[in-house]
Image (cartoon, rainbow, N blue to C red):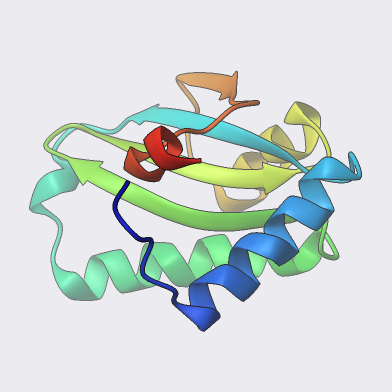
Length: 116
């Protein structure tokens, strides 16, 4: 079996995430947003969107965490941690972002799952 390469900073982040999600305080959600031509936005426009999202998150006092977003030609796919879907939707309302679909993602696997 191949040896796993240890990365202390990643391992610490994963442990912290597992602690919060295993205790039931945070759930993971995939948010799909249909936004025509979002993939052609400039770096400055994406920066502004990120700042808007961060501002909405600040208003929710740590109950929502934006992990990352993937930008496609006509939509985004965002990963959030939150206590509930309702809070994810409130974040979007505060930020003025549309939501096409919200899916709770209780299990995540990756290539290392084969070795665990």
